[in-house]
Length: 402
Image (cartoon, rainbow, N blue to C red; front, side, top):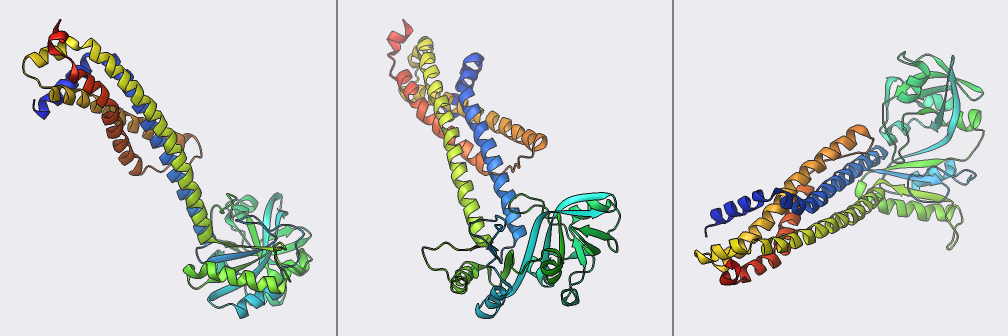
């Protein structure tokens, strides 16, 4: 029999018993739909996290007060990170473009007229803008004169500016940070979300000297941000900084560090590793669903072989070979799984789009799930269709016609 004829007969056989065909495709539809949704959500989540990592800066190293890993905020009570540490890093470590120390306080009360918010207050030096690649979109940045005079000036993040002043420009207005009144000299560019998922723009920036001596009343730093010349050297520079601070802080193993060093490249690798492992696990679960669907497919086809003995015997009697019968049943099995693949992909894409619109779950439709869907459909259709096809081909035509 010609391939076209085999395909035509297979489609006719499936169409003549629509309910049975439906039950055979359900497992494939569910498995492929789940695979499509899982991979779309996984790709969307990874993209969103990587965008947050890029906001951190691919050439950046953060030395934060307190132990721990990741983008966690500095731990309270740690007072060992000093301005002298920033100077030592700047003068003793090669491959560095910028070193900028900073202090910060979270959830400080900020007032402007009748408006009041809770925001993070960062105290930094003029090169804070270059270190973060975060500049004033309106007004002026922090300058050296502000540092020298301990000026009571600040820049607002876009969220803080909106919550305090609405659509009005805050430049030239005053805000109250704790007990100190500050003149707003600028508004920072929008940065969106931090790697921790918090609002990067709900902040104020003030001169470092003003923060340490007039507002925070402290001498220690919250973090030191380092910007390396070559992003590929960030890990090795981080190791040198760790060794330098061990000596300065008199830390010897197994004593724990009183600081943490984080690089964007290491975090990006960790994010990709976690995302890859999660996607692999969820893909395996989708594969299990396809496996169950394949077993159902095989059993229904085996039942169909018994019901279609006369048809098989008649085909053998008019010249069809065992290979022709086997090919027809394999074609039916593949047609079922490929139909399930098409429907499953469509349903999966539809549900993914609904998730993106109805929730905050990030979704990214890519080509990978469709390639995997085709591969899984072909494997399931071939593997689980072989046994029914063999059984059909092995029937004795004389016995089948009785």
